[in-house]
Length: 552
Image 1 (cartoon, rainbow, N blue to C red):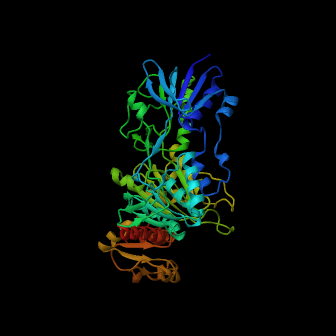
Image 2 (cartoon, rainbow, N blue to C red; image 1 turned 90 degrees about the horizontal axis):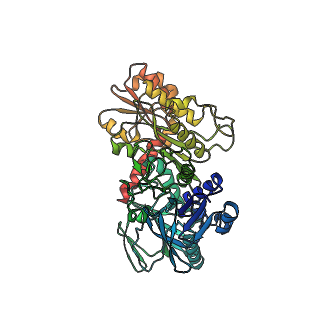
Image 3 (tube, rainbow, N blue to C red; image 1 turned 135 degrees about the horizontal axis):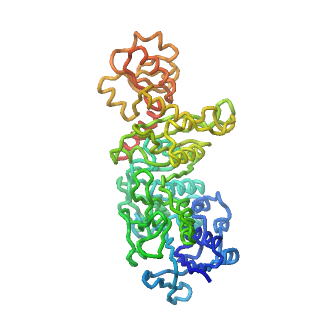
């Protein structure tokens, strides 16, 4: 026999490590302890079983102890809880949940893949409260829904990725949902104007969205919210976040990082010899700050499990820093992000340049083109891409992935214009939306155009700037920024005498015609800036701020 590897935790990172170890080493003895009754299940698919999108519960159970033993010769022991670790003796103490017996298990190498637990934000009471992290959670919710029937009501606490997936799938089951979100808008990893279409879609589906709202108390089956209202839902889904499971590591004397996660090096070694850790309970390295961060993503857990297996097998392997690339779909709207948001950059005092565009998923002359909004944040000195957010329909996943790969490969914002991307009318445009971002970045870098952001407009106007709307008369009448002057682009050269002196802010619907207008005026001596992202970005931002103001 070769090395004996003990793995604590049988989902995502733990099972990726186990199966990779076997593929690299047929002689190793591999033992996996899983506290729950299931291993290797698709936890990202759990909300969709609740909503009936995934009809077959067994489809979520990717492997069983028997199938893992047959194919990989991995000894998987479910309902076994590891109680403590002795790194000096290289022994773990294990409680067999089936028999109640406690015993010791030695190891040559130990991998902790204990993950994270739901952060409890709802006080315990008579009201059923569940998260959406385990098969047991969805079984419980399915049972509640079967009993409650078509008049079921629910409170979902937390408007992040899991919370929104829960909301959508509960609505699909006919549940009337109140969503309570602590921050000023849903999907807090996004900036406020980018999250606005998601909030609009939620409200259009009848979801009662309460932002800047928390649960203050629960009395029996009555919930009191911080906005002063009371609810009596049939059940609560607590999706307010997760906390890393570090109790085993802390008790064993392993070092924890500043974020509270288990501290590891680039190969996922902990501070104790022969002990590794992977998954949601582990501190990652943020690609932009190069500091520790808690990033709970299945892709990272699986990839880091593979890294550990390679290292234990004698290969020279290390993790890459994390950008936190993630995506969610809610009522037909897809939202994705990578890197930092504008809010994060502002909080860190880091200089940046923001770019908004509103392209279509593919050539508009080909049927089915869907609009999207793209926001990219750029370092004004190095032209490095600091973050990106994309919201829309088809094609959002493609664009965020291209930008994420560009960031990982060191492609600059201007460099996006030079990427050679697959084109046919049903898939994209000859100038792909990613290329278009690069063109805008190049114009800003070179000083060919100047821009201001939607949230900077009020200050600019208070300082004396005049706002000129260069859209058509019909567009202006359909919806305009209050106080703007309508001078259509195609007539602009003949209307120069109507433009007041001083700074001019031009805008169109999405920014492109505004850029043309800015070029016309700047070459005629005007002090002009373009409203980045045009009327559409301003509208989304102003709408989101209005909802925030009314909810406080």
